[in-house]
Every structure is written in structure tokens, then in C-alpha cells.
Image (cartoon, rainbow, N blue to C red; front, side, top):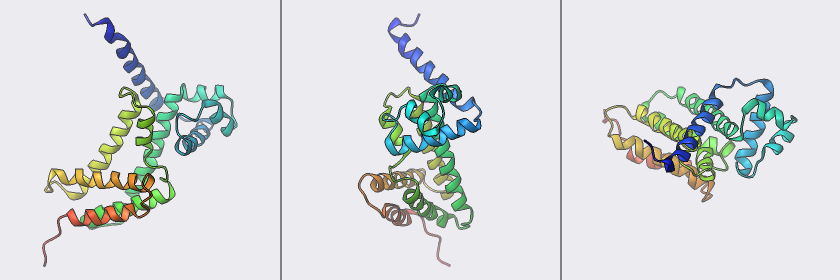
Length: 210
């Protein structure tokens, strides 16, 4: 028989899983897309905690009831925002790498792409990290979404360096990538991506000389 003291946390975790599932299952109507666009800008620029559903509704030109009808809860809207932003980021990165043929140059090109993304889209840092900082409870589904995004970045590097590379190399590149984001957004290092690129260039194996 489970301990009674465990039941509230178990119910909370189950509720958070339900929110995550609902956020993925609801199709987006035109009104929902407008709400999501407005909410995404507000959440990223002002922070999740400081943006209420009333403000989102007002900025989107809809009623608060419409926001809840389309997304169900603020948590579900937060997850939709994170997933939509992540989809844009992945498409951006994949598009930039598609034209680069050499495997080693593709790794370096990822840092060029990161620099361009941060300059135009990422002035406040990583939306996933920001969300986890604002919603620190490990059971909150933003942590799963963030972990999936970071796993995608690591898998990207693992695929680029190839199966013969040391396992640690993909982790090192992930750390350079994430460190560049923090240095750019928090420490104000405007050329953080270029510096990370130079560090990546130093640790990547070089092809044998002809």
C-alpha cells in the first residue's frame, strides 16, 4: 500500500503529465495561433511569471475565455510556446547546416548559426533554461521539454562528429554551445558564439594531411 504522504506529489506529477499531453494534442485554430504568437513574445521578453492570461488576451485582441478555451491552462500555453520556439530553432539550425557538405565544417557552421540566432532571436538567452528557472519544480513538464531540447542538440553534435569520435566530444560541443548562450545573454559577450566556434575548432579532430 503506498504511503499517504506520497499521494499529493503523485497526483501533482500525474496532473503535470496531463497538462503536457493536452498541450500536444490540441489542434491550433487561427485564434489559438494568434494567442500563441502573442504569448510567445510576452513570455520570452518579460518572463513567464510576470505575464498573466489577462495581458495575453488583451494583446491578442481576444477574451480570456478564448485563451482558456484554446489552451486549457497557462501551463499548457507555456508548453506550446516552448515547443513552437524549439521547432523554429531546430528548423533554423537544420536549414543552415543543409548547405554545408564537410562534416567538420558543419560542426563549426552550427556556431555561426547560433551566433546569428542569438543576435536576432535570442537576446534573453535560452527560453528552456529561463522557463526551468521560473518553474523550478522537477515535476513540472517544462523540465522534460527542456531536457528533450538539450538532448536534441547533443544528438545533433553526436551525428555530426560521427560514431568514431570519442563519446565525450558531443558533450564538449554541447557545453560550448550552451556556454555561448549564457555568455551572450548574461555576461554580454557579444562574440560568444565566435569564441565557442574557435574552441570547437581546437578540439575537433583534423583530417589527415594529404
